[in-house]
Image (cartoon, rainbow, N blue to C red; front, top):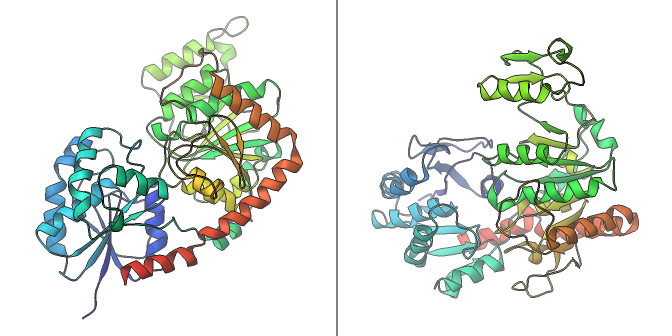
Length: 444
């Protein structure tokens, strides 16, 4: 009898766990993807089956209440002998509950630190983790920090195995060679870059505030932010309130989709043009998609570039001075290892969990630094508070530490180059060929 392996995940709408699932499916004998939702952004040559008509926009409450329904539908789909590997909390819950209907082998992959990582229905999620995770056949934690957080919730250590996320190092290094195209002029300037969904865990608002302070000394410095997410409007507004000229990928290209075009404000502005901002704001508050001639063309004149989801982010990362990662919490940050594979010096918060295991693997992964730490493979920084900030709040002590450390790295080219080489060396430890072998062993 042929045993079919299935991958179960919330969606393929983008994100670290989704990327890991796609990469593993290409190297393991995966029969199909089974999705709780209908959002698909990542491409796969595997068949895809959906357990609902829900999407990423569906209420989290509705999706949580639907977990038993997903589980029943999954059980109807499976053969008893099928192993199912699930990724992310909700899919993990579905995988385990479906065992009530069909006794398949449920392997769950946990990508989030359980002590710091739950959003939304936080208490309910933790309760379900405590109740359901012990019933899984095997738990794969993506870092030792994630494993420790599971043990702290009462999960048996013997049931948990740590397997780091896999990375196609050679493929990334080939993609680095692609030309920059329309971004060529921008990358003639010194660039700080970060990548990740525009969501609370990523803490990008702190980076904007740090960047503003750096601009006082490094006039030509630019910040590139890759990713999409629900905090986009807040981050763009903060950037503009900080006095940074801001480019936004889906707002700023001249096209026929706009309702209002301010092509020559001399027609409506008297004197020095003090009505321009008011008129643009009024137009947008009226619900009119508004094009502004000196704000909306991609050019080298901006300070901050929100470039959205990039099919090939590596060509941009590789040509940047520093990859800066201000996350408030993680599981095992894909973007950090990918930046290292590109040969870029990385500066990361020492958040739970993952960055310390990547950048300082010979240290205690439970330790969190309170000052800049020039570790073996990159720079670890104090983690920021989980607290939104406004443009007019003064920099706090930790933000000032980040400013001084990044300034030092921008000034010291030899230090930067040394960390670039060390980063490439460390990325080799996460080659997909090595990680896939670990997965094959547990699936066997």
